[in-house]
Amino acid sequence: MTESQDRYSQIREFLQERYPEAVSISLIARELGMNRGSVAKYLEVLQSHGHVVMKPFGKAKLYTSSQNVPFDDLFNYLSDAIVILDADLRILMVNRSFLNTFGIRKERNVVGTELSRLSLPLFDSPTVRENIARIIQSQMFINEMLLIERGTDRIFLTEFVSTVIPSLAFTGKPGIMISLRDITTWKKTEEALKISERKIRTLFEEVPSGIFLFHEDGTILNANRAALDILGLARFTDLVDFKLYDILCSKDTIQELIRKGKNAELTLSCNFDRLKSETLSTTKKSGVAYFQIVFAPVTESGGNASKEYFILFLDITAKKLAEKQLKERYRGIVSNLPGIVYQFYARDSGEWGAYYVNERTQEIYGVPAEPLDTWFDRFGACIAKEDRERWGTSIEDVIRRVAPWEFEGRFIPPTGEDMYIRGVSQPVRLKNETVWNGIFLNVTDRKRAEDALKKTQLKEVRYHSFFENTCNGVLIYEYIPGSDDYIIKDVNKVTAALLRMPKEELVGKRLFEEFPELPDPEIRDLLRRVLTTEKPEFVAPLKYRKREDFPWIYHYVFKLPSGEIASFMVDVTDAVKEGRDRKEAGSFLR
Image: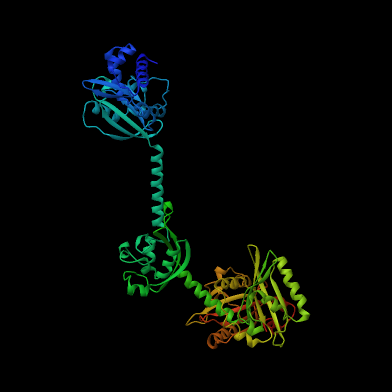
């Protein structure tokens, strides 16, 4: 401890012992054996640091120990790094944070040292030196700077304050207080947030889905470019006078979503013709559009109820129209088949039953579809006794092997008359279960085949599965006006295999141009009759190409509601090879 530091301590201890008594400079000097002038200077310094309090008594000054937090202690607990310099740039004070920030050993006494001798890169900057010089010369200076430390890339928010501390400098000249706050983490976080914000803004503008940000009263706060395009608008200003409900034609639905305040997904429709006439006259869209909607409240901090919401939406009109066309096509197929379609499941847990049964099951077989969970048992109970064991064994076998199923036998409906049925299905392996898509055909009465399944309404999800996975081929073609040929519109995978060509190479081809070896004019005449009379016809087994690897195919040809023609195709090669005539081969569907 230096002599001056020892004198400061002695004076502070003397005053603390006499507290709360206020004593004069003379008494302190006499009791401690010090020079009165020196005591006065020491007291002035202690007062400036907050260690003592001066109380005037006439012309005299009386001093007592301060009970407030001393300036030195407060100075050391500040988190900012602070250094105080005199006019000659010698260090008068530094706090603990300054020493820690710049790695200066605590035992090193830097007070009285010139700032330059600390060799701190931050203070070597010409800009910093120039600013300090302007403060010393009482000129205009910069109060605040952002400085980057060379070598470490630490960022400091640096403040410069001109001050006079006569009790420290004993000169009365301007001094400088420099405060440095390390904001490196904050700046990096700020930059990361800016980058994140740019990414989100880019995503908002570039994502192909439409996005609306709106208030709970329906006011549209923002919309991205995709939203405008989907709605057939050119500018955001086209939306400013409308509520979201006016745009999406679904006020009650959206208000219910707001009331629940939860994430939700749903499908909405919007009539643009009505919208154009009533509100949104600037839209370029027309007709009915379908949107897949995702609704989400904007998350707010503090758990407060959200007042703003996002809606993300995709235009799925083309998909809906395609599904509708496919649905009509499949309805035409199943409504003309001589039997019923069904979907059978067998779960890994051992449960099995029917997922779907055509509603014509009661009309054709006398077995109601409902209750669905017992339909397969009730249908199986109508199998004739001599065929019932074979029926059960065949089902257990294909469940075990996950294999295609085929059964033909005598069926006795509740009404009592005999009929013969043929059941075929193909398995599709799903998670934890296998599903068989199949058909039960009434092969007793050909007339029923013309009227069967006209009122069938397959669930939307089942149509494509049936078309692609049925065990027989389906070929759909359309007449080319003014010609004597037909365009192949669609085939399932069984047909593609029968015709020895990939599906994508078949679709779009002319039937007779691609298969010139088809019997002519018999087939052309038959297709013309079906197209004109709309009455289904059976076709004797034939080959599409006169090659050994091509199968003999038996056809059931009928007209679809769409105006297209469909052929239900059965491979009867084995029957032909076994010497059966074509009429016998046709019994597979009678």
